[in-house]
Every structure is written in structure tokens, then in C-alpha cells.
Image (cartoon, rainbow, N blue to C red; front, side, top):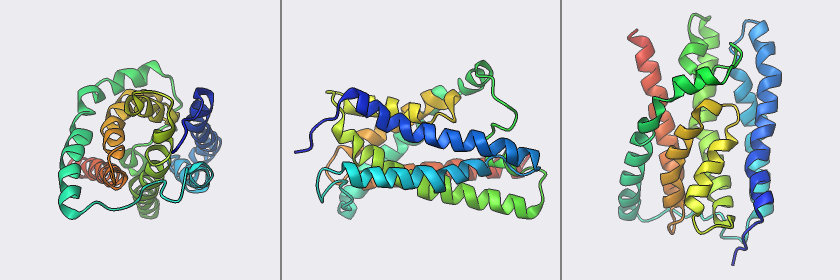
Length: 230
């Protein structure tokens, strides 16, 4: 049986990687901006060089046994029954609070280079920079980031939270982990809640990871299509 962690350790394991990623972003983004390169590339470096390797290392250190995290695929019928409602809630529920982000963004004074919108990052730039921005976004925020985050946060840490409401606590801590997006904490928490709920089901981690990937992909496509029609 997997034993729960202490709260100080839980907080450290959630916020520690976030702090490391934030440090890379804050150190590299201004340099890129000064060189007339997209600052969002700094976040790509944070994901590929710090966040993903660190979280995969912690998965190996924290796993409670050979079956954790549970990466088994559910049967096709069960996969669809779990994926459909989870995807619907994760895609739509954040919209209930996302309208607050512009106001929250104004409350948190951030430098001009602190922009993670791929459309804004690639607008008016040479074609090769736009290509790198789009490719990096897809690799980091649609594939690598979501899959590794699900393995770490929902595959391991969620099952070690010392609380009777791990889904809620896990969603809040996952939101706070995104230290580079303080204006989006509420949106991320609402998004993460259905992922945490389904990840606690048998063979639910694959459903959570699939949902995370699909929602991020749809969000990217919507942003890109909106930019084309401006």
C-alpha cells in the first residue's frame, strides 16, 4: 500500500519543479527578448531541460511499486465512457472562470516579455521563428508537458496526498505549480479537477493524459485559427 506523504513534502514536491521552471524562464526570456527572439522559447527550454527530466526523475524516486504509476490502457469501451465526460468537463468548465484572467493579469504586473501565447509570440516574425514557435509549442505544451505532468502529478503524487479530498487538493496544488502563469491559477485548477477525479479510477491515468493532450491541442488550434482570421 502506498503511504501518504507529509504536507510539507507534498507542497515541496508540487512547487519545487515549478520554481525550477520559473527560474529558467525568468533567466532566459529577457535575453531572448533583447535578441529579438520569441521569449516563449524560454519556456520550451524550461520544459525540455528542467521540468520534464526533473519530474520523470521524481516519478522513479517516489513510485510505490512496479505498478505505479498505472499506465495500463482501459478497454476501448471503458476508455470512451471515461474519456467523453472527462474531456467535456475539462474543455468547458474552465470557461466559467477564464473570463477573469484579463483582470487578474492586470493585478499581477508582469514584464512585456512574459507572454506565453503562441500566436502573439509568432506574430510579425520571420517565418523560421514562427515555425520554431509553433513546433516548440506542440512538442512542449501538447505532448511532452502534459504526458509527463500526468505521470508525475496524477500518476504518483495524487495517490500520496494526506487528505480525504485528494482530487481537490491535487487540482489546487497543480495550479500553484504553474508559477509562470499566476493569472491562470483558477482556470488551471478547474481544468485539473476532472483529470484528478478520473485518474483515481482504475486505469484512469491514460484517460487523464489523453484529455490533457487533447484540450491543449484544441486550445492551440483555436488560437491559431483565430489569428489567421484576424
